[in-house]
Length: 366
Image (tube, rainbow, N blue to C red):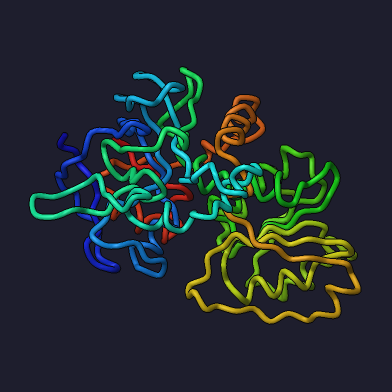
C-alpha cells in the first residue's frame, strides 16, 4: 500500500515527507495506522548518524495507533485494537526470558538495523528500498508494520494521540526511577536534566511518595514545570557549584540520582552529591560514542555508592505501559502536561522547537 512518511536521506539533513510503498504484514506482524508518534532525542542522534541506521530511513519509535491488519499467526491482536508500539526484542534470548527485553541479546540489530531480523525491509520508494523497522516500527509515517510480540494493547478509551511517548522516552525516565532505582517513600531524589525523560522521572518519584525531589536544569521554564509536577526543589546549575546547592538542601547527600542529560560534566558533578549507599542511574546519550567520565574511586567505596546505566527504564513495555496509563488515570503521572502536538508535515519545526525549549515533548499527529 502507499503511505506518507518522513524520510531522512543524508546525515543531519531535514526530514522530507514522501510517498512510499509498504509491504503487507508477514505472519507474525500487524499493520498499524499511526494516530500519533513522539519525537525522541534518539531519532535525532540517528538522523545525525551518531548512532547509525542505514539511510535513507523512516525513523520514529514512539508510535500509537489502531491495528488495521494482522498476520496469519497473530492470535492476541485483532483489527480495531488500539495499541502502543514498544521497542523491538526477540523475546527468546536469556535476558528476554528473564523479563528484561531492553537488554535483548539482539537489541542493536533489531532496533537500529533498519530491517527485520532476516535482513528484509518493508518500505521502498519508486527506485529502491528504504530502511524500515526502526525500533521495530518506523512510526514517522501514516502506517507501520510491527511484530505482534512488541505491540501493547491499551484500553479502548485510551488517548492515543498522547500515548506514544510511553513507549520510549517517558518509560525510560519513569522506569529508571521505579524499576532501576526502586525509589521508596521518603527517599531523596535528584533528577539531572528537565527534558521529557527527566520530567517523567520527577513525576514517577512523586508517584512513589519520594521525600525531597530536586530537578537540575538551566531553563527556568523547565524548573517551574518540575515544581508543578512534584519536585520540591529546582536548581539552576549555572547559579553555582552543584555540590554547594544540593548540600544546602541535603547535607548528607542524595539517595537516588537520575542522570538524563548525557553531559559528562553533569554526570561527574552528580556523582559528587551521592550520599551513603546512594545510587546513580544514567540514561542520557552522550554526544559522542567514545565519551568518558572521570570520577574519584574512594568516595564510591567509602559511601557504598554505585553507578549504573539504564536502557528503556529496565521495563517490559507489555506490563509497564499499562502501569503508566493507570497512574495517569489516577492523576499521579500527568505526562499530558509535557506534550505539544504538531502535524507530521511540520516535523522539522517540531525538532527546532524541541531543541529551543519551546516545547518539552513534541508529538507528531497523522
